Image (cartoon, rainbow, N blue to C red; front, side, top):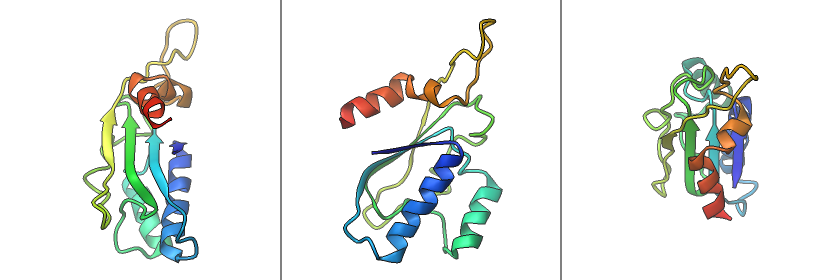
Length: 136
């Protein structure tokens, strides 16, 4: 399982696509790819991925063998568009990103303000923690 947050989701996605695309690591398989608070849906991010890597489309990395789940909070300013499913295509094995909305209400300060982008806030949501628990 690989869990990536924020800018790390872009880096992880890029590395996983490159591993699958290059053919150098044909034995590398990743059962679960988990993205939290991801900006991968932003138009300029998708455009950069396509421009820099010369891919025909953005899709699930071919090294992902079971699931890619994207967890997002509607109030997370970085995960602006919480739905990756509609723009990231499936691979030959029919694996496609699954979107799951969560409530990341981690307190930012003693006054009760919330930071809906905090990684540890995502990790403590029931959806993400249950995913990790069932994987382990």
